Image (cartoon, rainbow, N blue to C red; front, side, top):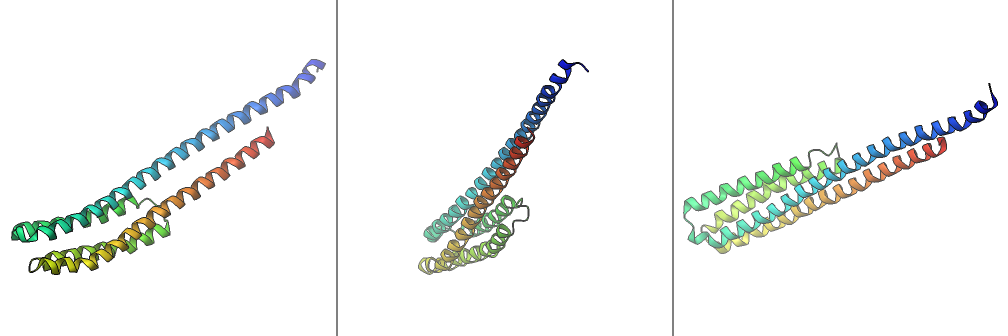
Amino acid sequence: MRLGAKLLLPCCLCLGTAVVCSGIYAVADLRHQRQSQALAKEVVERQQGLDRVQAQLVQVRGDVFRTLALIESLDEAAVDAARKTLAAQVQGLLGKLERVTGGDDGDAEVKRLVTTARPLFAAYLKQCDKAIDLSGTDPNIGIGAMRAAENTFGELAKALDGVTRRNQSALTERLDAEAALNLRLNIVLAVLG
C-alpha cells in the first residue's frame, strides 16, 4: 500500500463515520419531531373535547334553570320535551366524555375519574328531572330541589377538572420521557461521532 492511501484511510473512515452518525441523528430527530407533533395534536384535540364537554354541561345547567323559570308558561308537551331533551343532552355529554378520554392507553387515573363521573351524570339528570317535575306544582319547590343538582354539578365539574389536570400531567410525563430519550441518543451519537 502506498503512503498516500495509508494517510487518507483514517480521514476517510472518520468522514464516513461522521456522515453515518449525522444521518442517524437526522432520521432520529425527524422521528422525534413527528412524534412530538402527533402527541401535541392528540393532547390539543383531547383538551378541546374536554372543554366542549364542560361548556355543554354549563349550557345544560342553564337550560334547566331557564325551564324552571318559565315552567308556569309552558304546557305539558313543552315540559315533557324539555325533560326528554335534558336526558338526551346528559347522555350525550357522558358519551362525549368517554369518547374524548377513550384513548388514554390505560391511564388508571383518567379511567377512575371517568368512572367517578358516570354515576354523577346519572344523578344530575335525575335531580334536574325531579326539580322540573316538582316545579310543575310550585316553581319555588323546583328551584329548592335544584340545590342537590347544584352540588352534583360541582362534583362533576371537579371530576372534569381532574381529567384536565391528569391530561396535562400525562403530557408533561410523555414530553419528559421523549426529551430523555433524545438526550440519550445525542450522547450515544456524540460518543460515536
